[in-house]
Image (cartoon, rainbow, N blue to C red):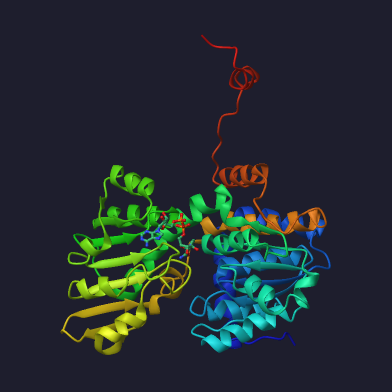
Length: 420
Ligand code: NAI
């Protein structure tokens, strides 16, 4: 019997079909899985993985397992689990999973603990909750055996870098998010499309002609703004970084302070990784009927306590849609409890893009095993050669060939003497 805490094992057949559907769109990961099956680079390694339990993650877990790893998987967010996928991982692939969509805070932490009690040699994290907990409560016990880990997202990398700065980080971490084949595609095109998918599935509203505000013009924000514009919305960007703000201006977006955008905004989505981006002062200025959501990692970007305090009543009007009636009579709609919209109300990023992210995860795990003992307790990037190889394999899987430098061009580009 595989140990687990999931919603319903009978959902496994549906989950298996969906995992296979995603696998068809993950050729790079499949190639890595085939190599891992022969070479077993992770043989004997216990891994605790804290990731969004999606179809794409299931294919990553299958890859790590083929590589010889002994894995326990828990959710990296209370709302992002796909219960049928969790069931299939347990029933069809024999992977212990601790994840239930909609789990409360206590259950979320109980599941993290189950992953920690697996006694990992390695970790895979998305948002640094697992590694953070290991450092906070288990530094004298479970953390000691960990040779390293990988981190999937921007917010997790920011936390880990801050741990490194404070000399608090005790294990090497490969920051998968920093690979070009991760953030340039997953954060931009993945979040861009899947956040709109979550918005549309939750609300079924028309985007054309709407005033759509994107808070944060980083990799995720760029993708979201671009796709919302493509569907006919009038997009406004808010930023705190002057360079990102100019980029948004030159891309043709309106840029202003969030306070100034509130009275016109029909839809506001945060993707900053920051705290209380939509705060009490903004909520007071919000247009009647505004839809508010977040696609950043934590549900900290919208001050929900302030919304509660300013409202007279609330009710759930659709799945993932909370309708607030404010004390002054205005209506406000909050989606997915302020948790990442794309993974709560839709299925997260399409498999095609997660193919590259999870190729980085699999190769990151292999890198840690290969370099164990020589790595310091720091945040590492995967070597650029690995990044380029993933891109090469992805292009090949798309049937696209590109030019290669001639000997003459190599010499020219590396010389300061040639040319006129
Ligand atoms: P990034 O660092 O590229 O961009 C964040 C941007 O937000 C920066 O330009 C920053 O200046 C801006 N910002 C910070 N505070 C702000 C404020 N108060 N108002 C306006 N702008 C502000 O980060 P990235 O990669 O775009 O990620 C953003 C968040 O999304 C992170 O929490 C990340 O973990 C998460 N993420 C979510 C995904 C999903 O599937 N929903 C996928 C990938 C990342």
